[in-house]
Length: 81
Image 1 (cartoon, rainbow, N blue to C red):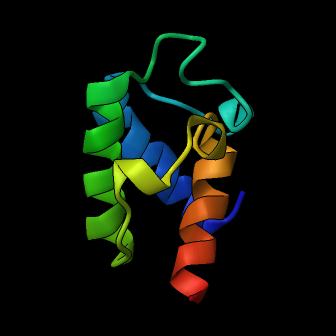
Image 2: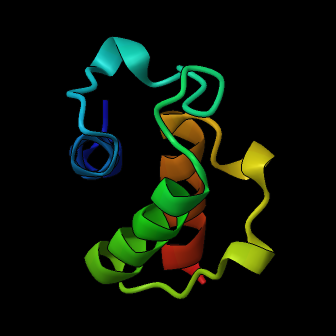
């Protein structure tokens, strides 16, 4: 697990209210009722703050942020821009 993934799990623990571990990097957050539309907005705000990137709900699809691993990949791709 890399540093970005660790940060994402920490952020998600705050947003979802549950501690997520390395074995849950591929857990679908929506299907498991850990993330909803309000949580999504909170997550995007935290990602912007922690990674100094700009993300709006209209430019991020659910499939891009369904799992902690996908969220980490998105954050890393935005940092690289």
